[in-house]
Amino acid sequence: MLAAKEIQVVIIEDFKLTRVGLRCALNENKDIKVIAESENALDGLKMIEKLNPEIVLMDLGLPGMNGIEAIVKLRETNKSIKIIALTSHDREEEVIAVLSAGANAYCLKDIDPTKLSDVIRDVAEGVCWLDAEIAEKVLRAFPKQDKIMLLNSNSRSGNQVPLTEREYEVLKHLVSGKSNTEIAKELIVSVHTAKAHVCSILQKMCVNDRVQAAVKAVKEGMV
Image (cartoon, rainbow, N blue to C red; front, side, top):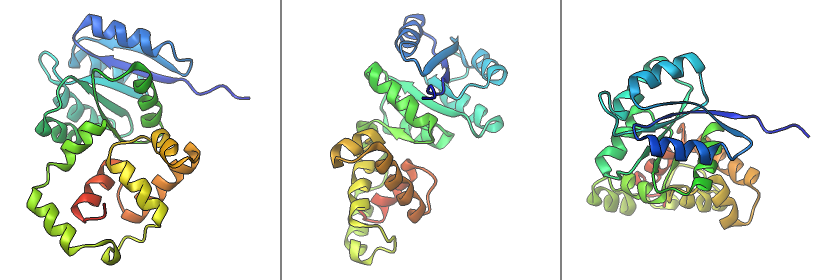
């Protein structure tokens, strides 16, 4: 049996204790390896250019260039790298700014290390991930009256996206911020099956990732 491919990670975080904790926790996984760390964005971006990791854990409250600015800068030169924003803040405007800048995931720093490892694996596979609380904040970015209007004018029966009943179930879990693993547990199916449903949903909704699907689902009254 082939060994799991090692996921290489770079951490950009200004607090040394946090960096050490993240490195120790992540390196306990056989398939995840922290290959470099930086306390600021400028040095971190240089490391990323040199080492080309799969995943970047990006703190937002960095000295000098902040995390959002660093994400924008990184996206200008590297479209494929996966970026996980890791922060203690959950303000709605910050969440929207980070996702708009090009982050693939937004995690709060109190996330369980085991959960963070799962997020890294999902993001490495192309999944966009949001903490459940963060997902709610993204959805709140749309005015309440717009949601009500859309829900009243666009029922499931009139919706143009041809999702199956099972896909609607998966979509509801996706909107709530659940990962493929969590969706699989909720629906009592394999992770592979859950992932297949998510891929089908993204294709049918003509969106590129889970965040876009969640936002579109709420805007169009699908859930």
